[in-house]
Image 1 (cartoon, rainbow, N blue to C red):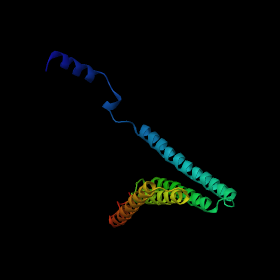
Image 2 (cartoon, helix red, strand yellow):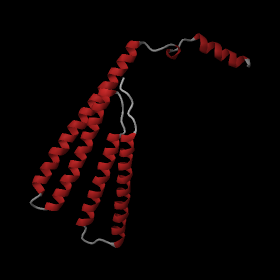
Image 3 (cartoon, rainbow, N blue to C red):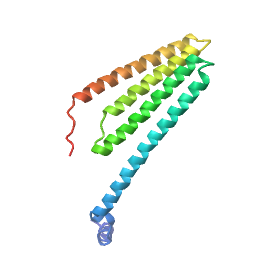
Image 4 (cartoon, rainbow, N blue to C red):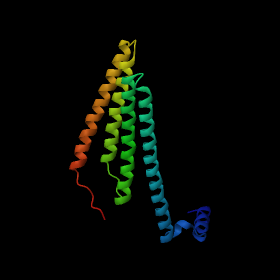
Length: 170
C-alpha cells in the first residue's frame, strides 16, 4: 500500500461515522412508525379516491344515460372496475399492516381486472366507431387477443400462487 492510501485509511478510521455503529432502537422504532403512517395515509387515499370515482361515475351515468344509454353503461362499468382496483389496493395495504407480509395474489387480481377493463374499453371504442377500417379492426383483434392471453396467464399464476405454501406469520 502506498502512503496516500494509508493516510486515507487512517483518516477514515479516526473520524466517527453514523454507519460505524448500530442505529439506536428508538430511531428504528420512529422510522417504522413513519413507515406505518405512510401506508395508512396511502391506504386512506386509495379509499377516498375510490369513493370519489364511484360517486362521479354514478353522477355521469345518471346525467348521460338518457342521451346515450350504451356508452353511459360502458363508462359506468369501466369506472366501477377502477373502483374495484382501488379497493383491492386498499385491502392489500390493510393486509400488509396486519401481517407485515406482501402477498402476490392481490396484485394478480388487480392485473386481471385491469386487463378486463382494457378489453371492455377497447370493445366500447370499436362498437361506437362509425367508420371502422380494416386496420383498426385488426388492431382491436390483436389487442383483444393479447389481453385474453394476459388474463389466462394471470389466472394460471393465481392458481400457482394458491398452491404455494404461505409463509408462517410470526
